[in-house]
Image (cartoon, rainbow, N blue to C red; front, side, top):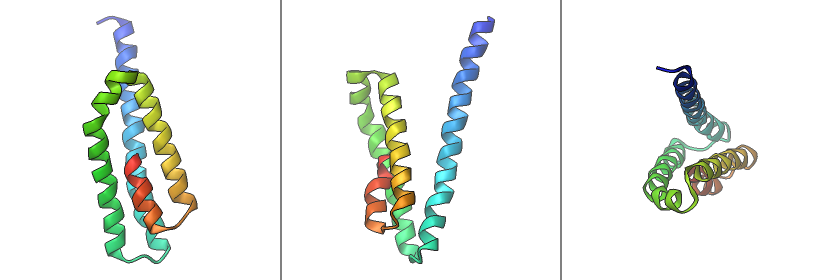
Length: 105
């Protein structure tokens, strides 16, 4: 295996590690932040459920966007939407807003 292939795989695995690390941290941030606002457990469960429903819906419909704009632009757009949605969830402690924004990761 050439040294160039090693760098390619290292970059791929590093980016996947950072993505999964961020996803894990969000799964800790959301329930803790909502719980600090005094929200009941049913609402916390609903927000987290909608988070993963949104993740599934985006995964299903993203193939059309990848074909139209390319995988690099799609990845950059999803990262930007994820960052903005997390910032909005951190700033505004409204549960309806969280249910609407959290699925757009």
